[in-house]
Amino acid sequence: MSFRSDRVRIIGSVKRKEGVSKEEFENFWINEHPKLFNSLEVVKRNILKYEQAHANEVVSKALTDSGLTVAPFDAMSIFEAPTFEALMEVFTNDEYKKTVGAESLKYFERGQMFAANFVTIVDN
Image (cartoon, rainbow, N blue to C red; front, side, top):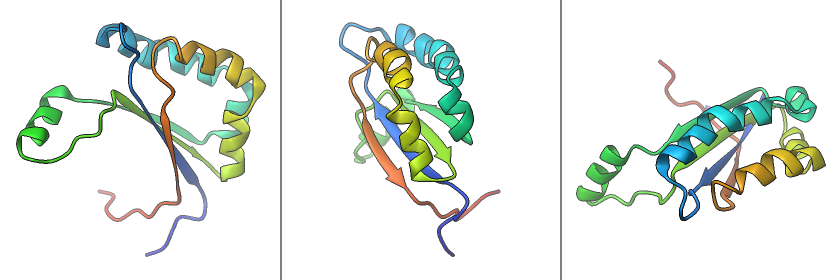
């Protein structure tokens, strides 16, 4: 096995701001954020794939009850691009910061980012 050479990922984990309900957060994250994000030329030029993962409270509780540690986030975003430079072009872009970045911070705290080369182990 080896790392994929055709794409890389940055994964962002976020926690909603205090005072923002789960419903408000999910409405923004599922409906509004993608529209803002996908409207940018820098995104159209650089992003190959964008996925979201939303915390499942029932399963998270079961994991905690079984003794496992659950990450304290409400959602994750997985961004794929051909290179890390392409991803950085998106996240450092002034238009991105003024629109997507500024609007996002109304709903969640500044997140944690994880840059990754990846290997697919199972893909059924």
